[in-house]
Length: 375
Picture 1 (cartoon, rainbow, N blue to C red):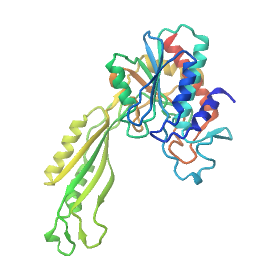
Picture 2 (picture 1 turned 120 degrees about the vertical axis):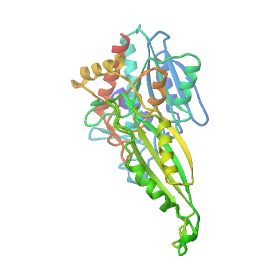
Picture 3 (picture 1 turned 45 degrees about the vertical axis):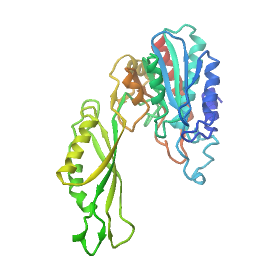
């Protein structure tokens, strides 16, 4: 069995449900230290973070990833234990195989292969690894970037190992992501007996016209990089559980996935103006998960596309679709950021898996990216 697969299996065996690293970063540090990387641990709260760098010259090329995984769900529904990696019919099964321990293993082996042939790269390399990507993402990459920025360590190029592939390995790479703005809205009414509605104020009824208007708004038209902004409600909660009580309040949890054609402040202002227009009494808490970012076609995208073409014979499609990633914390520093990893078809699912051949191909692509950027 090759080194990428063996290392992936070793990482899978660590039960690193977010934010627990469970020793994954010890394994990573051991491999990278052997290559001459300097190890720096940056723990914040209950989150383990690892920054390892080799060299001091520019440009600085960084591989970024996370060791934490989402919960397994009902383990009895898995075809094999989720933290006991099993190979069946050319696929490696286990929690984190695709998201994203397989990518981390491929990155490490790519570095081992690259430095075995290149003793004097024209630049330096680093790894930024966190155990807080699947969780709140407060004490992970964001805090590490704050630390690096405070001491003037600037990342030039960053490859994030998120699972971006769709039908075939490296058919899609992300060169940006939409912004994500969350809101928790409390609509205030007056509780009362359902037989005497004139003595109460039903917050569900009060909010309904505003909801209809909010759902019909075209927030923006999008642009060449992003589709139009999307508004979605994920949770509505109201009532006491009784059939004869008008609730006194209603909670609405919602999200904007927004383009770079609009700001989060504009979204907040427009949203609240609709509530005021309908005369609602409300409280609202806003939470910005990340602003939209884009890496324009240039040095990094060219290096990645040349590597993909050389290894696979195909060209990758640039995309900004999908959810958020830790790239949202790295891109604002001025770094060029792309995301490239295995198939996303089974991520977060029961029986998460990755094709063995895909991990080997990904290793070769990562190695070629390093050569394109540092030779």
